Image: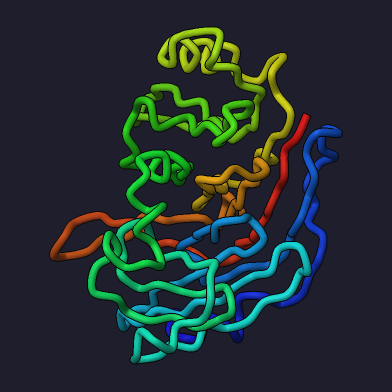
Length: 264
């Protein structure tokens, strides 16, 4: 966990054993990504910021050029004037660490007034682009579904109640048309249909999602989604903590970064 992220994040562009996808889903990236805990798109959708908070609370980040399949480590600077040109994004939605797609990052005083983020981070639609990870304490409703900015697709997870609480039964991208129904009714319909006719992509049953986010850009853009997923058998484990009781240990083994573009 304390190793530098750029040394271990991208071990090469290698194909995984994902099933064949529908014609409307294109794989843009599929590569190993250990030590990944946070994803952020840059406006425009060409660049992706991949970050990891280490045990010593330091942050390690890389900028991924999705179209060129290249990456560079982020170089942190002290002076705001040394931040590179746009596009810019921040690490997590309201974190005041701002990064340029050129590969430099800096701490700013206020995201809501800084020119790097003020025009787009305050848009409430930004907060709706995240897909919740497959963790025990997720909200039961409506966090099981995240709609793409265009409104044509959604990533969803079916949640059922088992003997020991909530159980999760996979992740899918489905066609989604909230324009024909009220939003809550559309969610009901999508969840009720589960894996049937609107399905365009699914994650294999032996994989689980750690984090994912749809691209959101106020000026528009393609329906792109970045997903970090891992082997279910190595994803998490319970251990006893004498102070806090049981807690979850998160495993890095088998984590991969998958970037998809969905289009009719």
